[in-house]
Length: 232
Ligand SMILES: [Zn+2]
Image (tube, rainbow, N blue to C red):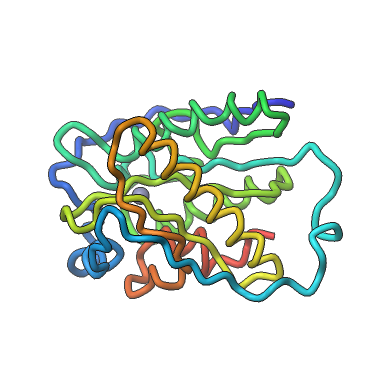
């Protein structure tokens, strides 16, 4: 087991987020991801629809352990993600990722993080569509270079109260799409159970096909999970 740090971070000064939305000034209007979803209510059951079973059995897809997990702490540096007052999504994401890494390492996984602090892997002089796209690609390139078996991207949404809850996005359109769904649904079950056992009534928004994120081509979530074919 090992926990390996990705390339050394450059320092970056970032302004605090101003409003409780994803701050992408070059996008048109609010993000459809959070505003177009009806509120299923706190007790609504997830209704995941798994894709067909892959052509190849899992024994042929997997190699012997240890397995490698690439954990992406969403956003970073000038891309703060969602925010509320002084709380920036990018900081919460990296906090979760750096707590998760040693837990996975102790369980026998090789773990790589996209970032351990507030920086990007690619030049990021300003928060633009192109720079966010290139940054996502840089993270996917690292995941591929370390032969990651699993890629998990951590995000926290901001938006209206109707968007409260936990949701897991996965990509069904791969040869191993069924296993993507299985991992997503197990993650959903585990997170919902743990959060509720801690006393929080988190709405279960279910496992979702990341193609449903669409409608906004500038949404980096869909790049990393769906439209980006660079992840092996
Ligand atoms: Zn995000």
